[in-house]
Length: 523
Picture 1 (cartoon, rainbow, N blue to C red):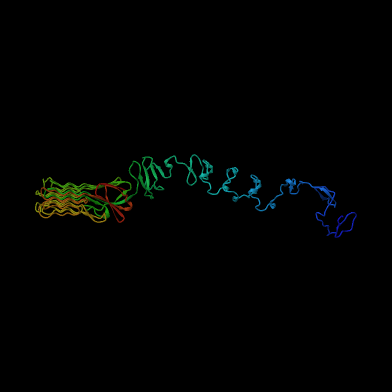
Picture 2: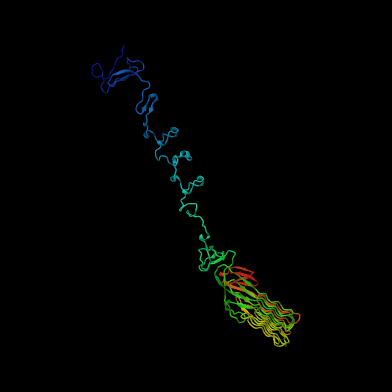
């Protein structure tokens, strides 16, 4: 029997339709709902106007909206997916196909240093001329990054003009290379004459060439008006300022006479300029020397005269200072002493810086030798042949030798000089020898005469003292003492260039150079 249709409420019939009121419906289970008229697999469709029909279902429908294609091959249409459709961090490297991102996919300024892995940008990734000074970090380009010959003249920022005649100086400027003549150098002068003290160069080392003589000089001291120009060629004579030098020149003393009753030797000639000290023979202090730098001054130290054996004593040798720009200073050697032997041939004393003493004879007597003006005094003569039968004393720089004969012929006094810083005696005459009594005396380097059967005493070395006379036959007189040359100058001017091994000392602000043998001093 058919089932019964139960309804909650059905509205009024309208024609052939059954309608339900709003809010009411029929409820079926699948087993209870059955329609007829369709075929297997069809579905009920509506035309939108309330009419239902059975229709076949499409198995692969065409897509629409943001999709294209069929359901089995649906595609997202172009432009359908934007930034709003993609979740943050949803797209990683795994979602991007190789080569899928080109320059058109990257926004301007989107890629910075944090987006570029180290070492991933190679030459192949850089377009030609894409890197200029804006892309370089200061100091990032060194020699290793520069190809050979990559930097040329055009790449340099130097001032001036680059050419075959210029060079790049250390101050980044192009300068003319070299000069064509010596005269074009800033530190050289070519002139037809020599430089003078007032030829003022800009610096030490300036070279001066005399184009007339060929002489060459270099400046070693730049002092306006007092420059030092040293001759560096084959010529002689540097051009340097002069300076004041005090001096003392004492010649060698004469030797004492030999045999018996012999006269003493005269002291060496004595000349000097220091501190108003008198010269020998009552002379005044002489003028100082003006020595010039670079000039060589020759120093001669006279040897003492030889001792008399059977005759007179030998004369002392001269001492001197000589140089190309000064008048030579010469002191004369002391005169040799006379002797009683072979009188009257040898009885007179010899002339010298200071004269030699006479030998005592029974003629009577000999005559003492004469001294040299402004150097020394004469020797003593002998007037009587009586005890103590003494020969005459040799003259000294400071006094005449004492007369012999019936008196003791003591040597004439010399002079003291403080040129070395303390007083020292020089150029004393030797004492006469005789028979009986006591020996004669001598000072300032002179040797005593013998009256007690013996030889005369030699003069002291490097004082210019005369030798003493001998007493009797078979004995010899003393040799004269050698001379000395002493220079004293401000230490600031002392050159330090000498020969002959002089003794160099100082006294206050001065330097003293004492020559006891021949040598040289270069100003």
